[in-house]
Each structure stands twice: as structure tokens, then as C-alpha cells.
Amino acid sequence: MAEKPQPIQVLYCGVCGIPAEYCEFGPEFEKCKPWLIQNAPDLYPDLLKGALAKDADKVSDQLQSTSISDVGLVAAGSSKPKEEVKRLPGGKIKKKEKPEVIIEKMTRNKRKCITTVKGLELFGVKLNDASKKLGKKFATGASVVKGPTEKEQIDVQGDIAYDIVEFITDTWPDVITITLFFIEDGKKVPAV
View: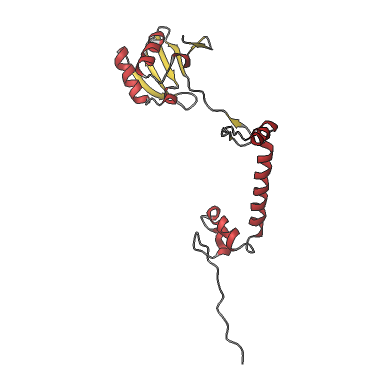
């Protein structure tokens, strides 16, 4: 007499709950990968190879980022705090923005002027509050707008470029005069 067929044991994913062999078609495959590498390495051998390759890449990146001066510091026992470097796609390094306030005067319709203030948010200043204070102080219209670089800036009606420096340093003590710059004839000039 023939043996009774036994039920098949199905391994279900611990992350998404579907059978492990169908995880790659599920909505959370990226989240499932670590679980699959640990619990079902025979189902996805290419994941295991990819994980090993990533580990090797991390080690090689660490070796490349270590310089001779770093090795000397580690050997001497002193440790220098290492800055986080943000890398963009293609290996480009993203520069940190220097906290500075740029004041620019633009002329429209030959007689009307707009004074633009950029960079106040880098000092922890809320731009909406700053535009209200500027509008009240100089009795003009002031608004927060997005500039050409998709960053928010304050536009104040009128030519108040030189009066605004003293007001900014008095109102927000975190902003010092060294960090204030004018843009005149396309050049960045200190506002001292």
C-alpha cells in the first residue's frame, strides 16, 4: 500500500508574512532582505553574495578614507572628532552651508526696490516671524517667498539694505555682523 502524502512545510517570511519564495514579488522586499539572508539563504543565494559584496565595499571605503595622519593619531592615542561627509550620487561630496546672511537689493520698474534677505533660517530664526518684524519696523510689505534656488527668503519692499544690518544684529543676537554680506554688482561684499 502507498504511503500517505505528507503536508509540505512552507517557510513564511517573518517581516511580510507571505511565503519566503514569493517575498521578491511582495511590497516590502527591501525590508525582507535581512530576514531572508539570515533565515533562508538557500532561497536567494544572490542576496547572500550581495550582502558579502556590500561588507567588502564598506571595508574598502574605510581603508580608503583612512589617511596616514589618521593612523598616527590613533597610534598616539588621541582621537580627533571626525566630520560626517555626505556623499551624493556619483561620488560628489556635499558641502555644508556656512551660516551667513546675504542681503541683496533688486530694482524693478526703474524706481522701485526690493531688498532680499537670505540665510536667516541657518541661525534658527523663523522666517515668518522675521518678515513680520521687518514689515513693522520699516513700515513696508515683507513676505517669505521661495527664491530661484528653491530656498525660502524674505522679500522686503523698499531700499532698506543698509538699515537692515543694524536691525538684524539687534533683534537676533545669534547673527553677528561678520556673517552679514551684501551683493553689490554681482559680488559678495562684507556688511561691516
